[in-house]
Length: 330
Image 1 (tube, helix red, strand yellow):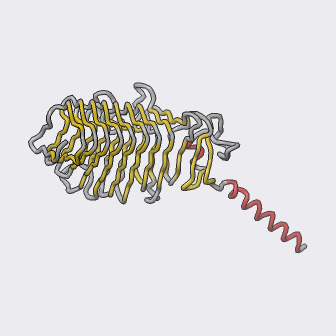
Image 2 (cartoon, rainbow, N blue to C red):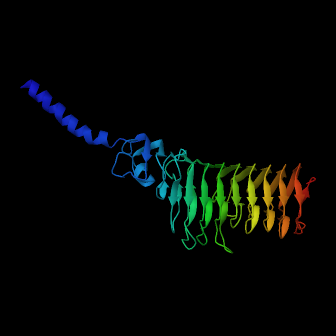
């Protein structure tokens, strides 16, 4: 009888634990165009979409694509990597919504990595909101991605919209192409850094093209009450946008907004560089700025643009604004 009692207890324990074991999250999962979200997202039984796999992937884990496909818009609330490892186009095609939303509101140390993805807002008339929208978390890394065709009206229409409001927030974009975002003649653009509150924001853009958008890069601190924003752009292209190639805009507060530009081409924009506000500062060196249709360098309301040397600066109308400050030889 004692033996039967022990066996019964063990059986009950096994029954209790079995469902919990089945619900355990994996550190690495897979998705496939021919997968199914009821699967466990293993390599041999992949899921079909990022939303289907993300609930089965542990925080800090990775979701990989096994073949080309369209894998669905997704909201990320924990540290994770979404990656296409060169098996064909790992795409997110949407209409009227965001491609990827990062909102780690419960984890201020969350790091999200997007690698090798094609994020597409669809054909003209889709009015898709933003390719990637960041609301909360520690770090967003966009590596080797293409983000295109997000043309939703204000306050949307951006390839990347980075909106932290507290703590330290980092944005790193490298080896990527951000093109044809923002409706023709309207608001929107390529990379929009728009913090609020008092965060410390660090932005690094390297070997990236932000072209044929409403603007190339705009860093706007008018909604901040404190903190600072420091941006570095290197080895990149900001060409053929409808408005400024690179703009720094500040409000009445004492929030520093500094953009350092190195080895970058800024061409065929109405305004090449725009520094607007007393705390807006742009340093440019080793770069090419040419063929601006309206103004090559615009610095107004106390904004400053200075050169660290080694630039080629030609075929631009003269700078404008009564408070224009250009320091150093271009």
